[in-house]
Image (cartoon, rainbow, N blue to C red; front, side, top):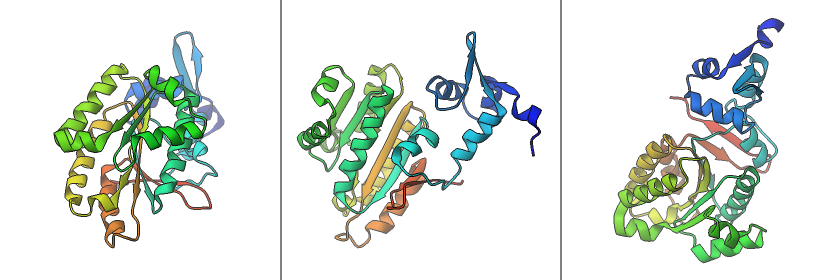
Length: 253
């Protein structure tokens, strides 16, 4: 058990980075964005050992919170590529609306790639939920793509090139996004989806993106659940949404 003096010790960004074995820029963003409690002393950030321990405890695998907002506040930070397992396509719209509202609250731009979803319907649903779609698109802070069209024309590389251009346009700043898959649509070409997600995950792992990937398997596809499990290794975590409250699980290598 740590003694009181150790708990009150102030750590530098470099020390926190070494302790967590993470890039110092990631730790800096946590402090700047108030995700990791820290105090600024001149131009430098300092983090108490107590606050760091509490931060890690809150992010422990399988921790249960009463809302998506609590998960986003305590357990995630970019880069993320989180898979969400769902059985009802309607839940995707509910999840994405809450996720995008959280991004707007924090001042982050939003990326919305559409696979099975219709671009115009996405705009309509987000607008109905109070999100100023037209204003955000005009300001370049909301980008909605018809990704199926991009994929059909240029394959996985075409999609990855599109991602790269958008990240560059945002000057490598933190962005939030969601791209949902309906497993039914990939029933005859699931290996293509698997290969795509593997390459996308490699790209997102080096980015400043906070991406969720709601995957929907309906009873119409008998092997849907098994196929979704094969996607798990190509994500940074899995978000479950039971009625008792969301749970984020991390993969253990």
